[in-house]
Image (tube, rainbow, N blue to C red):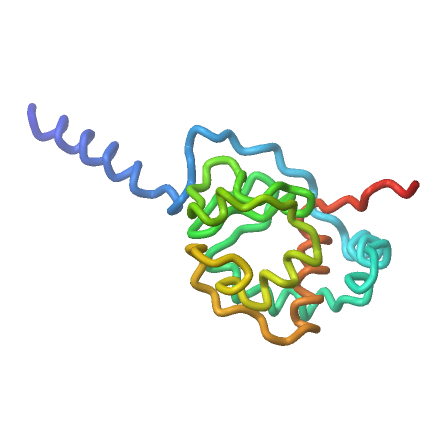
Length: 163
């Protein structure tokens, strides 16, 4: 009789190990919206402010592949080694729910926008000393522009209202 109880206990313990690193099971996933169509993505891209509106979404997707091992970009997606990036533009640095930020990120005081992300992606270690992010950066300015355009289109960015 002890054997079935041990098997159940082991299964429950192992189930807890399947969570993504840095995820927080207490943070409920937001309901996902349908992904934009190709035509909607083009419309979103052309509606972005310069220089992001000149971005190449295919190149941005390819360049972002370097980031996918640590970041997800889907609405309600899990945190991994890095936080989920859905809704990153306009968000205060270091506050994504359920992610354990370095002291440098948690104590920083700015809002993520295209310009800040461009400087961050160029060289994260010099942009904010003390960050846990070990990524060396994206040296090519066109690749950074394309990644940012891709992220704006894929992560729910809405431009601020025109005055």
